[in-house]
Image (cartoon, rainbow, N blue to C red):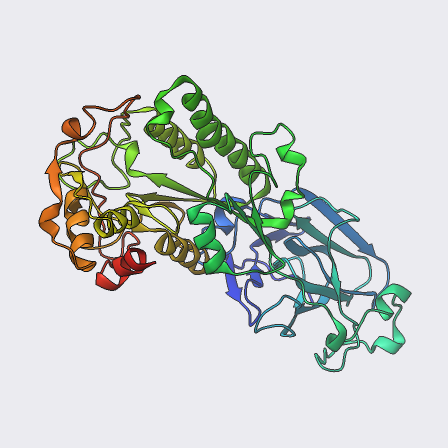
Length: 470
């Protein structure tokens, strides 16, 4: 079969998710032919979800004889397979955990065709012409400690129809002894690392994602994000996502010399280290931001595109973290406001005061919306599983903006107490007798929630009641 000249660059999906066939333009004449085997800009702009997978190694397997057969090998990295000369029959089997485990796809490949093989999909081929040069790009360096998965070429359940019978060709003893499908241990997905696992958001993420071998929940004691050894603390190529739920959130203490140091270490230095690791290893970095990156002087709600203008140290460190994370090719920045989670929070404090007969003074000149940690966790999972566009998302409860005073009165009402017991005061009045430094607060913390543009979660009586009664 002669190489097909003059084709346009097209991509075709297969029954195996992520396994993509490419028809390559090959230009030839009496002297031979030329092709662009991998052209990043053109190939990632085809409309099919062909990732910019970042190859770091190019391997070539030269095969003298027709019928040379190799496989089936599933590796913990992505491969871009093509041939420089000759022709192969290729067979791919999905060996990843999931509904498509065991799915098979076969096709022939000559120099005018290529195939993108995602991590965990078993790869095998049989040469159909002599002097076939089989070549592949991979996005990780080969490692003897990496986790591999194999399948026997002759497995009856997948039933690959090899053009040349396997009993007539040369196959390595190692390939002959690979397990049947029933005995294959599926390759798990890339790992997810959740930092700050003991915090309010960390606990919500544990409840949302559950406990699985490929999900790692790390506390500061498990993993010091400010350590110079962080780049070698894990085999980072095994990770697909880092969800950074670790942060310094003591807004007022951040205004002290010691607090400033801790805030910058946790919210900037650690974030910069994670960002470098994510960028270097093709990891998706999820970062939770804050309304404090704005000064609160805008008329109307803040959009993700609004310029950052923080007031105090905490806001400055969060804004710096946002800027760093935005440089990571695969990133989600979730901008939140007035976060309420499991543990001590404003809602539970107001419920406790009501029960103890205390009549609080509550700030009435700061406006925003609550954000529940459970909703942040659900949103993170939704963004990751839907493979939403990378970028900045506003995440708060939906509904009309309110003040802290309004929320306190509602908590009193819901717990059967007179909301008139709550007195509204200005921010200046509330902090007039503060013993230590007070961080400046944005008066307007309202984040815009557009139709289909930003992720949001509804706030209803049942949601608030979860935290009032817990």
